[in-house]
Image (tube, rainbow, N blue to C red):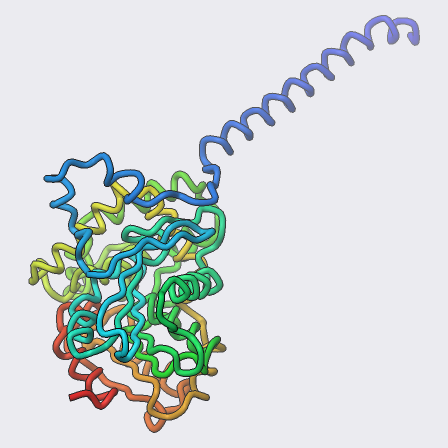
Length: 394
């Protein structure tokens, strides 16, 4: 029997080995192919529209860009290791220095109704497009977290011919995501920031206000990156403000995957463009900002990857340690303005969660203004009135 086994066993053993080897090779090949197809290769820098899309457009097409190249005076493009940054600086050189930081899904165009009047009042104003938005490039291989945004701010400030740093070197106004970034920057460099104004600031959004499915999709890594990129781009292109409005008006009939007033991340971000309480959007500028978001999907290759990384890593939620540091600021040097009808940065949540961390109303200028999340450009005069009061400007 041993002889028979030797005669017939070897070929069978050889066939089994061949089958196993073939299976292993096929599996490895399929995995490699799937990784190549579904996991994009990360570039160090994804160039922005100024060096990719805009040069290919005709003059007529450039004139139709929702975010005009001459939205603000004093434009410059700052070269950094993370890519180029579009910066604007204007106003009297000896005026109060004011840095603006905008939100997650838009460019700094959303702050023009506050920035331009302040410059006309004598302030030296600086705005910039955060990485992956507007006309700035998008770093492709680093997380969009506090470290990246603070570094970007320092690079932007260093690009000026004027001094914007040192003790009481500047005042900072941050809106939405920009408010979360501004809070963390001021907590990191308390002596540098003379005053801090937070407009509907991120940073302490309650995680439960986002649907569990949305949080799982964006943060778990279950869905391959290319598929999630396609889903995100598709969702950002939809006119979802109406869906948000209907959800708010008819919560009992809501059949969405995030009931009880919960947002998904895309719905939350788009509220920077349109007021979910109004249906359809009521102002031409709201429509212009929404058109800009759609334009970015077509002409800024880094916009969606930057948006997705921001959702994962940026200071949107659970920033209590930074906000506690703000309570150490000199009383009367921090202001928080919240929208009365803001469904994202909810005034009652922030009164309960943020105000105590900041030292209470004796320490902070705390005001509720008309409008929803996009009140800085739907209710610009109301916003300015509070800024003037906070700074004792006539």
